Image (cartoon, rainbow, N blue to C red):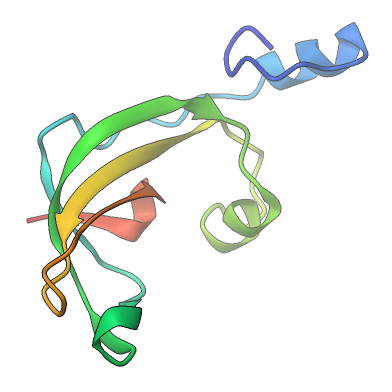
Length: 110
């Protein structure tokens, strides 16, 4: 697929993937964000939950959505190439630096 770089055995599968729309990029690098949907749990602080405040450090090439994303965030609507956002943050519980990747609906601007 020329959009996401996924390799397909059949040319027709790649062409089908290329027809999927691309979601609008919601964040840019250095945006300050928080995890808005589900709390994280710190294993170094007795599995206490927290919400982080961090910065978008990387934006990954649009990818086809996995089944969970398609069902949970797109509601089974037509499949769309979606962005992953790399986020760097410090855990407020243990003060360790972390990085993780999130889909746009999981993040909110701070």
